[in-house]
Every structure is written in C-alpha cells, then in structure tokens.
Length: 367
Image (cartoon, rainbow, N blue to C red; front, side):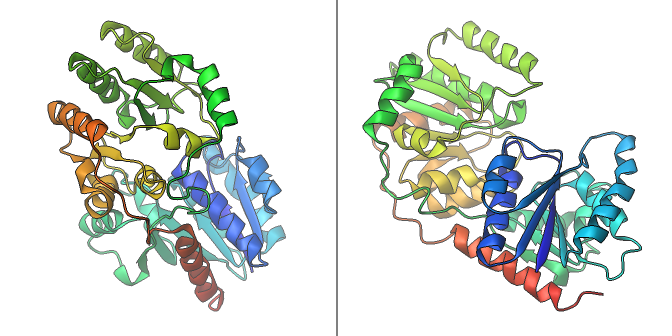
C-alpha cells in the first residue's frame, strides 16, 4: 500500500508529530510512505525512518498556492498512491482539487486536528472519504457545526503516546541533567514549571508568567520554562513576553527556548507541566505525555485538554481564565501532587493500528 500525507510544513506541532508516527507505522508494516510539504526540521527524522519526502509548498496562505494543484496532480500520477491523507486545510484543498481527474482515484482521508472556525473553507476537512477526529471534543464540534455531515464517515481515533519514549517514572541520566542545568543554571535547584508550545499568544504564555509571579508572591521560589516559544518569525512576540516578564519582576526566573528534541527529559525534571491554551485544544498531547511519565500536569478545563484531564488527572483541572485558582492549584500540586497510575490507554500503537486499519479498509474500494 502507498500512502501520501499532505502537510503545510514539517517544523513542529501535533499534526506534524502524527504525520511522523503514521509514516513510521507504514514503513514498519512494509508499506510505502510519502510526505509532501514545504519541508522543515522534522524531514530528517522522517527520511531516516524510511519515508520519502517531496518538497512542495502546498500550505502557503496566499491565492498563489492554488497554482500548486497541477504540480501535485503530476506527483500523484507518478506516485500512484492508494490513499492521500490531508491534515491541514490548505493542503486538503490542494489535494482535493488535485485528485480530480485522476483515474484510478486514490481514496481521500482527512484528519480534523483543530477546532477551526466553521464555514466553507474549514469544511474541506469533512470532504474526505473518511474523516478522523482526534478526540471526542472534535467529534462533538464537527457534529454541532456541520449538522448535515454524514456521520458514518467520521471516526474518533485519539492521538497516543509512545510509552517506550515516555516511560512511567523515567528519570534522565546524570550527564543530561548536568548538561541541561549548565545551559540554564537559573533553573537549577528550584521547582520547575514547564509550558511547551509554539510562539503564539493562544498557548497561554502570559498566564504562565502571571502564575509564576503569583507563586512568588506566596513565597514559592519556582522557575518557568517556555519550551519551544522561540521560532522564526515570532521575534516580536518573544520581545513582548520579555517585557511582560520584566514588568512582573520575573527577570532571571523565566527561560525561553526554541523547540527541542529532549522534551521527555525536560518533562521528567519538571515539577509541574502546564497546558494553558486560552483557545480549546482539539486533543492535548501534553497531558498524556506528562501522565505517561508520572508527572503532574495543570491545565484549563476546556476542549480536548479538559477532556483528558477529567479522565486521567482531575486534580490538574482549573476553570478557563481563573488565574487565582490557577495559582492555588499550582501551589497545592507543588506541595503534594496526587499519585498517578500508569497509563493504559491513549497509546501510540493503538492510534497507529487504527489509522492503518482505516487505510486498509479504504484500499479495498479504490475507484
């Protein structure tokens, strides 16, 4: 079986991670895996895992991107895929249009990774022969905002965590700890709060800074790591955050980094993992990674994050925007966090199995 996944780029993010994970599962099962995107830092890992990457910018937000339809159609004629899987709106539009006129026509799969504004543009994600929702929250969102959608084409396949990559009770080696804390000495010997997320205000970086200041006002000498916030094109936003840190008197107590590959180790040395997105997340991978490692996680109780916290770690739920309660709950968890049982669901292998099973079902019905 040959599967082509369409992405805007392969830099960082949940959809990008899922692309890598499905590519890996395809290769391991003896199938042919191809990803088409504008490229990025994850391409090396993709190709090392046995997949092919083809560079084509099908995610640039301009009308000119529709000029890529013919180029993509030519590629698909050459590749002859059984399934084309789109994970983002613009690539989905380009893919949908490119599939027109192809005989045999590959089956079209879409994954709704986000709770995007309902309407014609976002509706492309529901034009797949099969549509994957990454959580029950996403399924409910689709049904609410697209009441005429054929629910028989919709399937919930939650994203999963690799328990081998995030093992229960994991502790980093001394060599890693020495290297990390020598790079960021201001974080050493203090309770560490880590908020992973891109450099966008939707991720709640301001709330994390306010939380840190609130803890300090209570005499709790914590530190904050904004992991992955430094990205190309986000310089103005990072400057805003630095100003906010200074205004709140938190200079020297907050570290900001680019995306890193040692997330597991960072989570493992963190006293508390934060998930403070002010816009509902479709899933909340951070929650299951933290729980898999047996690390306490604190987040706003809405969207997919609230769904997972309610099921896996209720002590970490805080009403959206309640900054006073956020500080109180963080102080409680830093003092004495409830025990965490080993994760027995939301496993990566389950997600991979279900997606490949869906591909196989569709392959039997190629036009």
